[in-house]
Image (cartoon, rainbow, N blue to C red; front, side, top):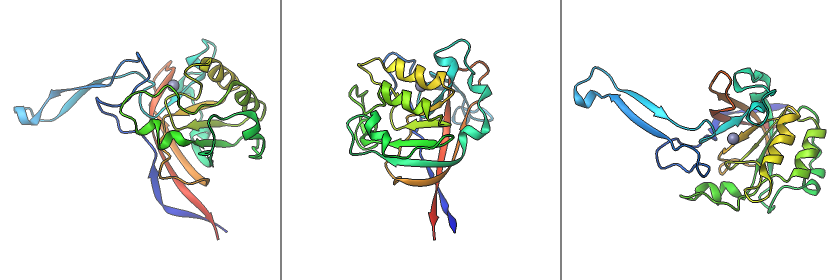
Amino acid sequence: VKKHSQDWIDISIPIHEKMVDWPEDPPFRINRILDIEKGDSCNLSRITMGVHSGTHIDSPFHFSNNGKSIDEIPADTIIGRTRVLDLTNLDNIDVKDLDRLKIKSGERLLFKTRNSENALKSSHFVEDYIYVTREAAKLLAKQKINMVGIDYLSIGSFHDKGDETHRILLNAGIWILENINLSSVTGGEYDLICLPLKIVKGDGAPARAFLRKITVV
Ligand SMILES: [Zn+2]
């Protein structure tokens, strides 16, 4: 019997002005346009941010004008059974590492790497985060998984053609969830709910994401 735990784990990154963004992406800024403390009837804020800030999803349109945009994401991609893979022993995620994981077509996969303990906790951008190699991305594309997530700002390398990793996945119709915090999550089966903003023609969008453990009794 498979049992759902009662507790939803929030794997989203807090959004604030000191958060770490991809170099040269627009920083998150918030201005209180109306402020109760200043005598206004309510608090009302304006924000500016890049759509790839914080926990977010990349849509195929990010790297291809023919690709789907974030407003077209299927609910089935971001809601449902998900496998968290503990890859905290790896320096990057390569083909040989994926081979032993028995990945099935249609799976939602979240990669827990050492980023959750290291890069993600740093107060500045870390270039040497753990990423998915191009060859591994090709394998995931061949395996026709539904979506993939990783615990830093990019699924591809900073130094070595990370764009290619994105293109391979997105062109294969695999949506990418980036910058999730998996530090309090162990490997195993979960329910995922991850809801990106419905930005028309969006190349991506910030998202709130939760996991709920499924245990077999
Ligand atoms: Zn992105």
